[in-house]
Length: 137
Image (cartoon, rainbow, N blue to C red; front, side, top):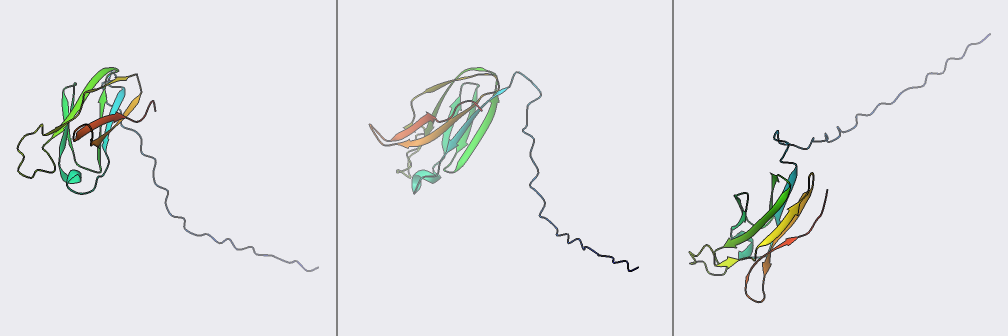
């Protein structure tokens, strides 16, 4: 009797490690269950590099240039925000309110992420506009 042995070779290839899932940070103070995220998309030219400050009624303020974003944890409730900067087209401007935005008020619910963009406004006069762009997470 002939016994045949078939050897099946296992070819093992090394797979690239998966990107680990990052656990979302949650503050220890559980009342801070909501987030407000403000993004300033990139613009062309001098507007992109001029720092703009966003003031939030927490009170907090955030300085953003084009292509940056910031998120902050807040308790559910009502928040107002506005933005201002020196005039990006006047390099000698010392007026921190050369460009301003209207006030934007947002309501946050428990666990909600409110998304806002800070964008250039051209009319009726040059300045900033804060626009809510997202809803609940």
